[in-house]
Length: 184
Image (cartoon, rainbow, N blue to C red; front, side, top):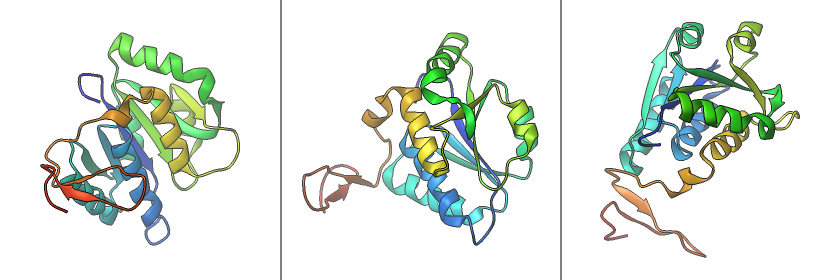
């Protein structure tokens, strides 16, 4: 969100062919719900292309990066690291503290979203291990709930810059117009 410390999402792990859709959805959810960028493993090129295409068409700003250094990204992060895991502290118990640290110290946040099995070192490197329920569920759902709680719903009012297309909300049907609001 603009004028606030950065929120980046790191997708930890990607199995080509198996995780393509899920990794893409992590990126799309990060974009739609207020993060500033997503960092994918370097073997998730198709997911990168899809998220960049959506950003080009529906607006930004939002950045997509690839890295071969997932662990180094976490270790070198200059700010707070939040690892989303069903084994973590309850989201409702720690989100206020995370929000205050971000605003008070001006610290950027790296939100780590696991794919395949996450090594114990990630749990140790995180400032917070956060569980959105302590039940098995989708990492995309966990990311969505966490970001919504982090931003307190403000991300839903975001204005998108340089959009070629815009969805006009309506009770029934679908309506997509040019970025300037004209046409169908």
